[in-house]
Image (spheres, helix red, strand yellow):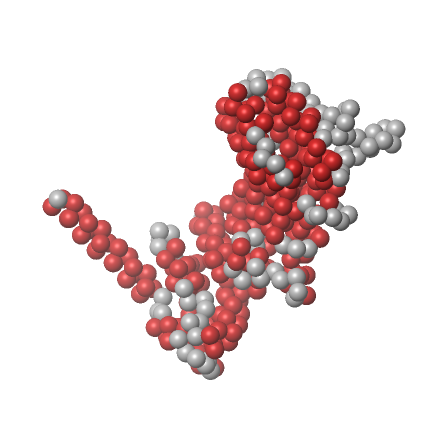
Amino acid sequence: MMGKSAIFAVLLVFLVLVMNSVSGAIDTRKIDMCCHKELLDNEDFKVIDGFVAEAVQELVDTRDFTSVAKHRTIILSRSSSSEQSAAAQYAEQFFESAYKYISKAFEEAEELTPEEHKLKVNLNLLILVDGLEDVRLAELATKWLHDDSAVIRYWAVHSITNPGFIKQLNPTETTNLQLAGRIAEELKKLVDKAGPEILALIAEFASVVDISQAEDLLLQIADMRISKYADWAVEYELLDGTILKLLDDKIPSEGANKPAIARRFAQLYSYGIQRYIKGQDFLNATQKQRLASVLVETEILCISRRLRMAQSIIKKAVEQGDYVALLQEHSRLLGDETRPGQLSLELNFDYGENADGSKRTAPLVLPEPPQR
């Protein structure tokens, strides 16, 4: 017990010293007074500007990256006023200063050496932008969407797709609507080369933002994943469970886009089932497990809802390793060369046209897996 108490005491002293050293690095006394004022004047605006300048510069100058998170917390915790009457005044000055000094910090980081230090500074600045969750800082993030570093690209995308940021992309406001469109167009450029982590962020953005470009973006992601399945080059099948759910949620009750979205849903799900059946000697255990989860969860969450009846045939077939039953259910739900599937009939879509101009009732057939 004495040993544990001594260790705890040492840790407590260490934490206090760390907290004090961090707090001492950034003077928060004046900004804390501004946070609680009911009305701000020019001197208060100068205090806010000075605080942001000092705090952001600390992120650039620090070499002790174990304390960077605490620096960010200090900034984020003072990004808004506690007084409703001064909230708009405070926010306008804070984010004007944030844009100015974070822009300057990115410029300063370009001169830093070694490259690892530069990368860490840029990364921490992007994580700060992400935490601030304000559309006024969108430009600072979009500049990094095509960076060579995967982790930089990830946080750049995360900064403009996190829920707090997306809430501000209000279609009723012309400026934010235009910003949402510009972001969607930039994200489209990333889809074909993005990894699963970034694709998941983009897909969530595309499913939530209510603009036509976002819907096109979601369809582009679905088409890319369908193409990856056709080439037997798909990575991280669990992502497709998310994409299928998002597609299902976006299928409207009516409208010109209903067949297009429903078709992508059905084709992607079909390829998932076909991959599971044809890939038994090609896929590893992890891939099979991930794919099985996608098939079963999509049946439960999406197929059952669309057909207004609890569905469990795919679940039972997967659990029992019954590939004949799985293929039969695939044909029943999604269609084959002789008849349309139940899902096609329910959602009123087809798979395009045959060479003779007739409507295709079956999804595309997945090629056989390549030889190892």
